[in-house]
Image (cartoon, rainbow, N blue to C red):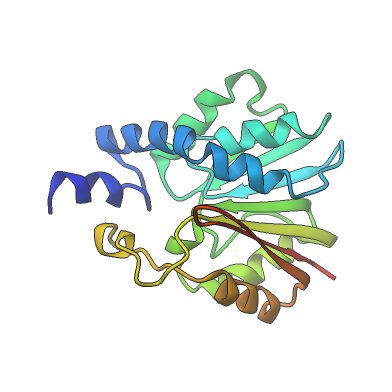
Length: 203
């Protein structure tokens, strides 16, 4: 595997020195997509929110800025990501921001806990995506929102060749799966060059 492949394979589960480099890259590189996607959601003060695949923790920080008095949770399969997310949010960790290591397949949260769940550039790596979407629905409050933000929207993308274990889905495929998981009022938003945000509501 070449150095480029090694670096980008750290997208799924950052580890070691290359993983730490990847997390810095993610925090910077995902900012435009994340800021645009979050701008599509009417986020209220005092919300309890979860970012799945929280990576380097930048989305947790952005969520907190958009909701006064919020509590923001992050979960990531990578130990390196948890450490970085805690460092980035050090001033509010375990007060307003709470980060755990774990998988989207089995979320360690009570039913109906969250007003909003976000997934930024991460569903490509979720095992058993339909099952993970059921888990998201479980932890959302009735009326809660789930927002998927993706930049790779073509199953034939070069990224699926470069990044081991990556599966790309079209926005229409994601919308269909979100609907199948029991969400309603699902919308697709698009922005050039290839940004897409899919937002569903738990009935």
